[in-house]
Length: 516
Image (cartoon, rainbow, N blue to C red; front, top):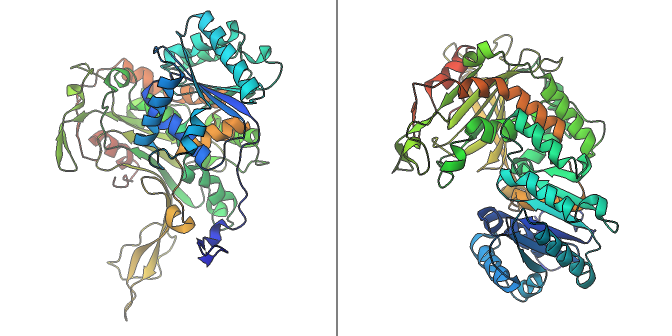
């Protein structure tokens, strides 16, 4: 650490970093503005962008929802949300009062064109009074069933990009983008009637996490890793997204979704694409997304007859988390007592290209597991010939782990000699932590992603061809699971490692999962 002119210690790793203020003035319009996502994540993200001086000088934030609120009531609710959920703590004056002037609210239903005319009038008012320049970013933080109707009403209400003659128009769509391949294609058909692909930002908050963004930097900014990143040196890849929480208040939604749809098809598949992609020809959004799509397209299709050999599913039973008893999935509110929905999913995928031929990628995600952890573990091949270490010494494979949450960092496991006269070998780890290394706490993903959408940077958003291909990959599994009752449910205890079938998935290949 070095001292600045003001006497405050400066982190040398952050020296020379440019400011990230958003240049274009704009309105950000949140549909579903009184919902939980808005209060917990989206409005606090906008507030923190303002605190960090990243918002443009001229901006407007407009909430649209069915609740019968007005501007003042909306501002009061949003201040409560910031006070409770913002990473920066309660709102501060006089900055909050200035921020609140940029907040407005339109009450209306999502199927009434007149309400969208009111929204248009508010946006035109913001253009005049706040100098927002006709630029509009619509954010659909509503149930997925409302995505297509809202897009249709935007068009009918004169709010589509074709009607905007003074600025740009973009739309952020929350996941899930469809519930299967057919519904995803139907939704895409509706959205693309109004918005071009370059105007559609399909958000996956996992891609906004700092360690996820660093996957490409780790590979392509370091000569020591990329030469080993292939089938000659990599034995296998494990991608884990484990949670300790159950379905909480989302039982009604989750019981019609499940872990395969909720996590594997989008979050985890995106991590796989970043790990396995080829170097892009440039650092722009389309070059990066081109390479991600090529990886997904190269994944070997799963034959329906092999679904039970190449995937595993589970459903949690009662157990304990952090020493406290928790109910089983079928005992959760709004969950069917005979539910066949998986709360754990594991999949083995193979990529048929020269870089990865023969290297298995094991993906898993589940609820009510032993610990909350998201990570990518690259296990390298065993040494070809043993030279050192007593016969009883285990020579562990080298493992590179990219830790996404709750820890954020990188760990490298390698073998070293134990001090002493004899040649004993033990595995040791070398760890890097983002917070400690850079002296900052990573901002929540939504701050990065909303800011990028305002800038027009689509790098961390998912393109339609990748969404469609991801659905194609999981559909054989989804079809088989939906049409087969799993008589073993519930098949793992809350607080455990997942179902036995998941362990068998790797045991058949002579491997085992990393402990959660």
